[in-house]
Image (cartoon, rainbow, N blue to C red; front, side, top):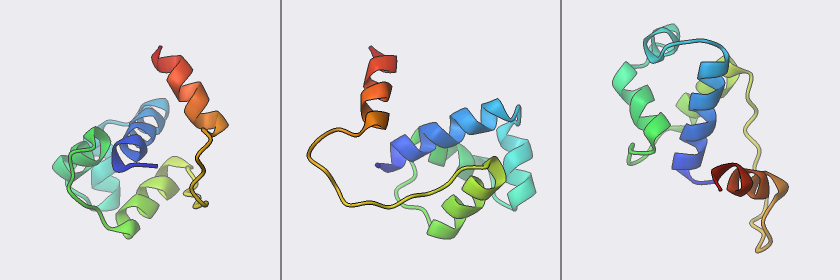
Length: 83
């Protein structure tokens, strides 16, 4: 998963929890600008601790797996949603 995809998942979860960027970032001691950059996929790099803190706050789980040449079910669903 790329950083921009992670950002999209974080944005969607934040909105599902009806939190503003300011509310979520303040609760984590993070700047709203940093959260915005993460959600927009424009942050050049991000520490894993920030991503884990965001995931924890939003009830998300970060999973690692070997790359596959075949698309995952999540990728196919995302492609279908974007079509």
